[in-house]
Length: 242
Length: 63
Length: 220
Image 1 (cartoon, rainbow over the protein chains, first blue to last red):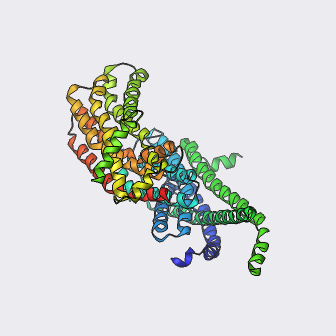
Image 2 (cartoon, each protein chain N blue to C red):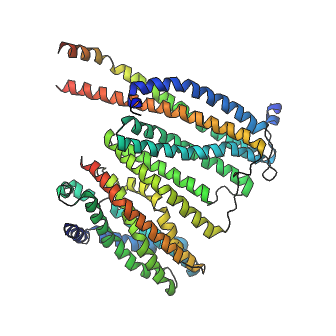
Image 3 (tube, rainbow over the protein chains, first blue to last red):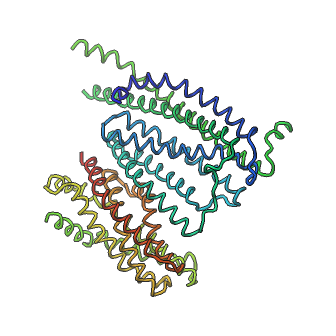
């Protein structure tokens, strides 16, 4: 772990990984897009609209994975005081927020033709919405505190408080949902998925993963550059002051 | 044009499928572009600050 | 004993002139009585809305007083003094949170049956309203104190507190207001109340540590 904490080493490593993850993302997106739109069966219940699943499900998974990255990086940052870990958390958060918004939107356009409603206060959709709010809070924390060091630690504490609360929120939302609606109306996805639908779904999941890796690395590099700028500025300022 | 439309015709729910995929493309590409652009801007800014550096290094060498 | 002295001092301050206690209580009453103007005076409808409205407004009333929970002491330097005192920062944060609950939340809880009556709640369920707030509201203060501690050095941190704390309030709201919905649906409210209590206990467990960690950061 310690070895990757060195920014130069990290930059070097990222530059070696990124071409590969970029290539995998592009190829998997193209193949997955083709299969999911043209070469996969229509569902016997949902007909063609099942094709929305191939973007909705990976986006929803990535939105959760991203929060796990934020939380794990925050934890690493707080415990081992890696500046790079804080930057990783900061870099992953906006991507997670974007993917969460995408999951919510695709969920809405999937919901309208299948259940006749844009938005259902269903347990899953509600949890994803809450996750989106958690991202907003985390990002707002970074924005509002000016001192970089303090902002990184304060937002990390928040991310950890959020992550211990996620199971409680999820449980409470599910409980609330069953109390109010009886058995859940939506039972999509799950293990009972048709074989021919697995291939496009897996391809899209792979594509989203590769995309996430590339973008997180890119943004961590960006945050590193920003820090360098900050340090240079401060040293310039200090010298002018002398 | 009609051929293209026929390829992307998914029956009566076409609009929803288009909306989902177009949204996915927009979100994925725009996040990529924004990150790219800010990264380039930051790199340029870093470059513009560099000239101050050699002098700084020399000074250290003199010391 | 320093612990209780601090609790007592904070409660006294909250109920001194211009303190958070009276202001929050007034907000609670005024905001709740806005609802009939917005949705109409139909008592059937108000009765269904009442538990949710009272819970949400109580939550917001607690929230608006949170941004001064640590900040006032932070600004005049008494927080530095408290950090240097033999009382650990965890206990200091907990004492101030406890004082927040006693001075801001408890009056709201006690007043809630009156507002329930105004919103046409049946008299039989007023006791349950009081009980659900009594069990759930400690979680509001405890989770809120984390937000207050994280934003202690942020000027005008009120909006930020709302943004970071409200999503975490969702379980409290679900179980708290849910017990009253269960009563109106004719089912057993006890599981809701038990879970509500569990959330409060869990908040009690993490809040002092998270708040103290955040305060240390602010004090650096």
